[in-house]
Image 1: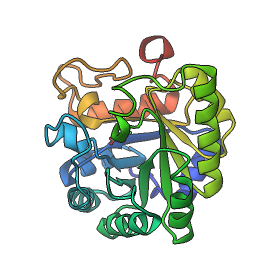
Image 2 (image 1 turned 60 degrees about the vertical axis):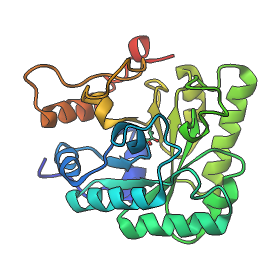
Image 3 (image 1 turned 90 degrees about the vertical axis):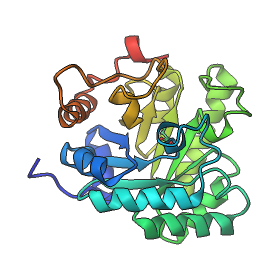
Image 4 (image 1 turned 30 degrees about the horizontal axis):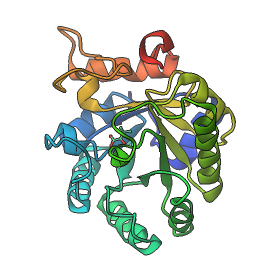
Length: 268
Ligand code: KIV
């Protein structure tokens, strides 16, 4: 892809305004950053999912800010044009706005272009403080893995009308506070569509159906190298004889054309 432009916040807004789907994948090292970037992924998320897929942990909770900064540096070294989102890990922003600013600064200095944090309501002043200080923010609602114990496991969020309304209210507040992107995880497709319709910013879905402005998958899931049973929303883009580069190109192309996800197969 020689004619690809560098992905900036401005470019992401243009894509959203034009209805172009945003293709995001998680990425944790320089080698894959190069492959994903060259295959046309718009956004590389250095997710704290690295605790599970790289470190073999049962949850993302033990991942440290030092580890996130290290992996962000690696990804930034391999990347050329994609937008890099650094995930604030559990315990790095929950205490105070000051703590969140310090932690976000660390990830931005490591090479992130934007930071992501989980939750709504209590995170609104944090988002506002980060944005005021020049740090772009991606919010994360629906199933939020750092709250896995409070949520009672890996469950679909926003199933009843009250929970769906709360999701939409939280999303609107985060957008008003200045978040410029939102990841929406494990939410019924119909709720995701309502939420997307009420928000001015791109919503990147993972298990949230085809109505989102983009999609994200955990890299190891879409390459079929994660052990065990996969959630319904995952598609393995590796088929025998296909290279990793080709699998990523297919993912980008299917997200952009709307061929992935297919609500009947991957939705809730
Ligand atoms: O950490 C991560 O990889 C994420 C995605 C699941 C969206 O937050």
